Image 1 (cartoon, rainbow, N blue to C red):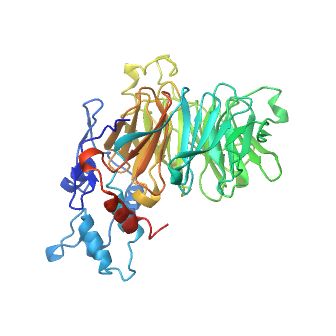
Image 2 (spheres, rainbow, N blue to C red):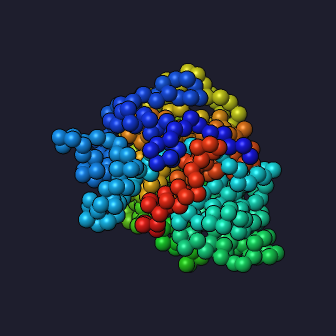
Image 3 (cartoon, rainbow, N blue to C red):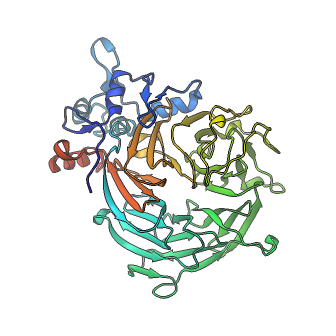
Length: 492
């Protein structure tokens, strides 16, 4: 496939630089104004962004002060790769290696904006796609009953081709266990299936070549009502699963006991997204079509009441991604925004939204009403709001960029207009737009260590984007080996 490339430049080491590098050189303090290439409108920096998250993010990618010093003790950012490498080789820190902030200062400038290169093309819509925690595997789920697991380290070879059992409508979500031995997949059914990924069989046909055990997420008080699972996630220890359903509920499944351990009637509409807040799995975040994000503390659940509610979206929540610190998370919404939240700002409870909506629409087949684009929630509790992408037709996913390579400096999301958008977390600037697909991009995933992003779309394409440019400005194999040696192998 022809690799469509964004405007790129060459730095002094011969590496491709995105426009972000040039902008950051011109204005490191985040006051630069970035143009939205999709609309021609200008995206200005956020105002009154919570100081703590801004400072935390800045610290995660600020290099050692000795590297940033120039004449007369003046600090100059960003620091060039040559200067940083020279400083490391001269052992400026006494450790003989980069700190995590040094590493992020360098790698966060090299966005995966070049390409794409086609990994796979299916005849059915791609709904979910994610890298494994170590980046060695990539999982993609399709409406046509297939879940494919690709071995990234072996040239994206299909390691497992799973044909789903009892599929209803589509694969709505998948999750890989922390030890990468098991994968669960969900559809519009209360039964979530679990597959042994570590087996030698490449073709995994349900109950023919392999057993796809069914985990029943229904309970006695469901009244025989059949619901669908929109979201399912493993806990960090791999012992539990949390799921959100069309039954307005959150479900927790104990894998060791092989039974449902908790069901909460959590919202007044579909629970489209759930996740554990951090490694402890005590806190659960949920988002619903009722427009609320809720926080649940399993240590003190009283009559099924949340620990707190966060309001600010005007329409349903399509996805939530945790920062992993038990404090911050982001949500994507049908009101065409991503919001950043601090759970310390949550309210004890909210019974209903104020009557601000004077229109009727359905995101599945209608465009967002023009009169709604300028509306703001009167009680918005979010820390920041990001606009530019489109959330229509399907539950579009959004994420924090990887901690290892970027210090979670960015937010990225799929979009109904067939693009992937990357925003600067602190400034709110739209720093990149990836264009290739012909249908909505429902999911996308940034490699946890490498500067690589993979997008999956309803057009059936699984496409890979990297920082390395194509054609005349592609990095040589020698440069790529040097890059890996300098920035990856010391840490993996």
